[in-house]
Image (cartoon, rainbow, N blue to C red; front, side, top):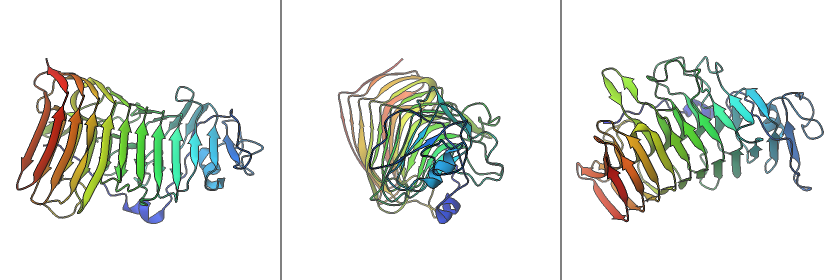
Length: 357
């Protein structure tokens, strides 16, 4: 039985904009002649339009940007959180050079994610950053989140790529507050999450009640178990779930690597019963593909490399599972599919070679 604490993002969704944040970025590169580029640097100043002279904080530049513009952030450490609610591209100077650090900034439990993407009205992206130290919520029931995605428009697109997403060291209760690397919450936009290094969280990525989602070529390492007394829950790599009426389609995990922790690799579940829904049993079907992922996972009682589950009457899980490889360590199991309480499953497996050591 997995445990998912869920604190609704309803406050953030209602207001559209969260608290201000800053990101580190890139001050090099050519700007389009037709689409202005805004710049941010640690030695800048939050005045003007951030085009001729860099601004100091990312959020100031994001607020100044108009849709389709790019905000380039120079190398450095930016101690802030960032809220994106327009169709812009946020570009850092590379994850090794530009850090967004949220340590200590969420003292009231009102910030959702060090980086938050709400409804943008188009295509938005975040790339080239280390995003770290989500501050733990100050009240019971919330999880620290490094990246929170809540774009409520099915015609939008969100891309989170080429970042290092790390739990960091600021959260002294990270073994009990269930931190999450990337969390989508009713994020109906088409979402791409690729080429990120994700580490130190209980859940590397929680993709709940999504629009189409591609989770590709990410590296998940060093995830941690969490305890809600008296139960300890194994770490979870990426968790696709549906628990609201309707069907969640096109959930894809491919070419990802899961290593250096004891716990689950990929979970896909229809009718999840401990998340968004207010009445149980929860309703929600899900379909997708799990292909060409690799696993090198330590043993943890109850954990599975690829775990597929459909629960409660009327819910269905449809999945293609192919070409996955690597190993899990006993007592882990490699691939498990379960169906219960009148739900249905259709799982096509081929070419998988996940050993149990």
